[in-house]
Length: 254
Image (cartoon, rainbow, N blue to C red; front, side):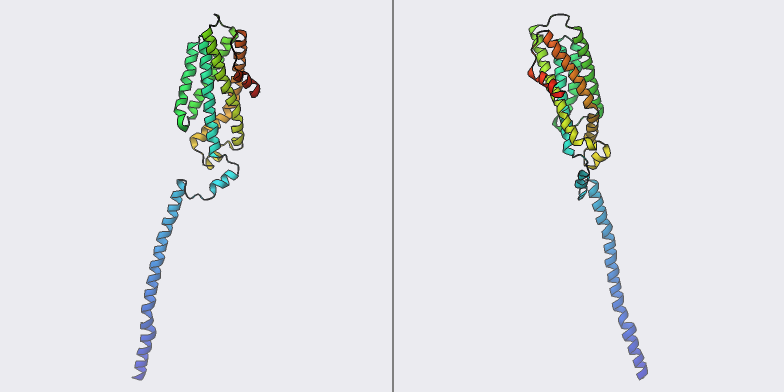
């Protein structure tokens, strides 16, 4: 009986007794592990989703900027300054054309200026709009150059002289602003490719516009300087007052 009781005692102590605590512990650990495993993907997914919307990016933006990518503010400044320069140029071209009796050409310049109305408040026009704008600007310049090289058919009146002088002032101011774009281009020229611009956090529309401007503005400036030079000569020949901003624009842009 002693051996039986001893056997039963050992069986109860080492077999029956320890089984229940081990089972409870294992179930508790298993439950905790499952809960952690389920929660970890949720946290990871939440972090990925935040990063897709620009949050939780940590040091990525400073690192990209440190590697030479242009700051979004520099691109925005370039685009807005370019639009402002074109507003002045188109207003000047319209006045010059009106003074010379070229109403259809003046209307082209005014229509192109209307394309810029949507850019008020910081909105950025598409590259197709910028391309149309540049094309019209070039076309109007060519028409003005041809007309001024032929000379006026009728002597200019006092009113047309004033309109022409006003056009010179506006065109001169536009040329000065175009020349000023060189400093804006200098701050972004080393990273004028779409991948680096977008990595820096730039708006895609702004990045595309800035890329177009970097490629087009230098040639447009040369054409405008030619138009302004011819317009100043025409004014001097016809006794029209030449604003100082027009002459200073020519000397400063060279």
